[in-house]
Image (cartoon, rainbow, N blue to C red):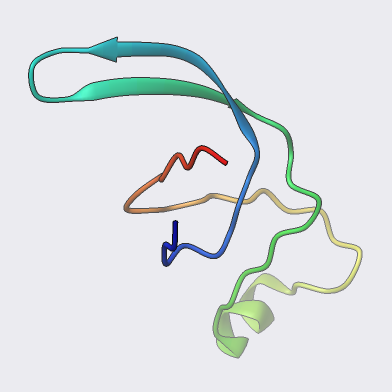
Length: 69
């Protein structure tokens, strides 16, 4: 199956709750080994980001696509 999402995180299905129209699938994920972010240089300067800094990642996504291998 081909799909457009490029970031892949392995997950385990914990539960599936379904009704007539929608289903809620709860997942456990292992921490990714590495992630990347693209932001403006102005933002980097404003935050004073430099190598070795510790940050929190806030991930905003429109869709989470479970794909069964």
